[in-house]
Length: 100
Image (cartoon, rainbow, N blue to C red; front, side):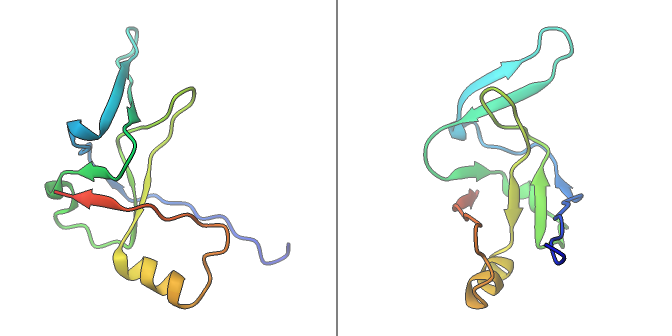
């Protein structure tokens, strides 16, 4: 594993998940931390969150998960095309999202 590297995504889009993408919303009564359980199907994000974003990989400020939670990592279509075209996506799963 001499060539193993970690992908660290530091660029973040602001909270922008569309309400119809949310199955359940949890807010901590003590600190106000908010997380979501998404519905089945493509997640929808507000287009305005991507204004002036010039990165191929970003993470969401919104947090998702049942027991634990984390940001979603979103990639540009050109990044996706590069991965698929060069067959370097071993172990990666890409799911569609909608920008509305």
